[in-house]
Length: 277
Image (tube, rainbow, N blue to C red):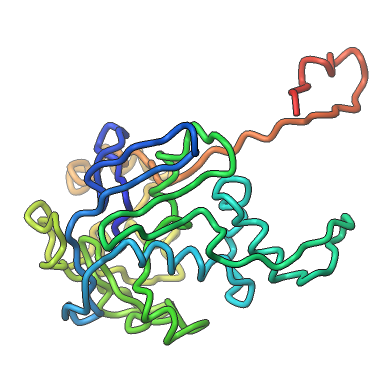
């Protein structure tokens, strides 16, 4: 429902999304992205306005505002220049954290995200980050309609009518623990390759146990088969043609954590675990 600067093709290769091209200046550690024409719509599919570079800036400022309690804001720290300084400056406001480090408030203009013009966006990094381009499909780099963020504050994203959409679908209905209804967004830049007009997700607390039976009854079109019933389904004339392999899951990240000061016995070769700070 939200398009990002870059996307992945079916082979996991990066391709243009909302950004049509990009460059990196090694001297200043600055990425520059050129945005395509794209539109925001509401939960009825009505056009709201243009997607601009400022929407990426506004979304990052929202995440870096402690009041909004972002669960992912740490993914910007040490990556986007001054993101951590800005966030902790607001949290501690001249005070010290648990490690005794003092944090002074800095202006958001010092954070490494800028809207040069409506269709030009820059990110300045804190250090060289080889994987930065691939991380732009992650939630912390998603755009949001700036005026709506200012209007809704903490209520942003709490209902289908509490956010706008620029992706292949917009969320028409969001009923927690009941149903989600997503409809094709005809204003999406890539709408010609979106072949499903509507997707409904129906909540069922007993999905893990009766999901396969719901498929048989035609109530849903997807369920995961556990190993204890898989052979029965494969051997039954009624169900063997319903089985297919799951598509590759690509919407996840790997985190490698290095132990810089291992404290275990010599027999386990602690020097092999050490990195350089």
